Length: 226
Image (cartoon, rainbow, N blue to C red; front, side, top):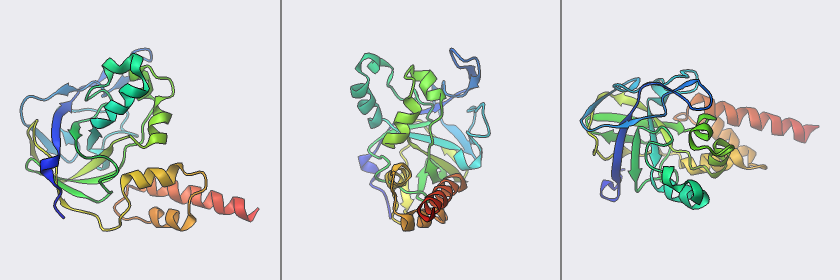
């Protein structure tokens, strides 16, 4: 299945070194700069891009961070007093596009980006640093609740990516669970247990997400048994 690349616009490619997070002092790779020339994309991510907390960020299953720029329109409306800050790269993404959101893609979808080939592994699970970066105290929780989190890729074939290269889907996962659906099930206070069982064993999905469904399903089954 080929994605309609004509409907997608790439707004920027971003890389960043480590900097101190204001008000915390810990290091972060969230402060990224716009690339103005092609960048090599390898198994660990874009050349020159770094992550401070390698336990929860980066690595082969989280090599590239993609955030839909249209979500920033939503955040501007939700936080009008802070609207000026909601621009691509604010949340530490490497790739910013318009025309593709969590409702359109699935874990396991394969894309061509420049000469590289990338595969979606999971929705991005937001951490506390986006709250520190934006100044919105509970922003990580809000992003998770809305599912406007973006997503992460592994690199199936290394290559070179130009700043205006558009991700083109060359293969769609056949399971039918969009990333938006993954968030909906994860956030549902009374999820369908059969659906959770299916997600807990969904092969293209990162193990951390599968384990989250598995653990919660076991908890819910235990509650029903008590």
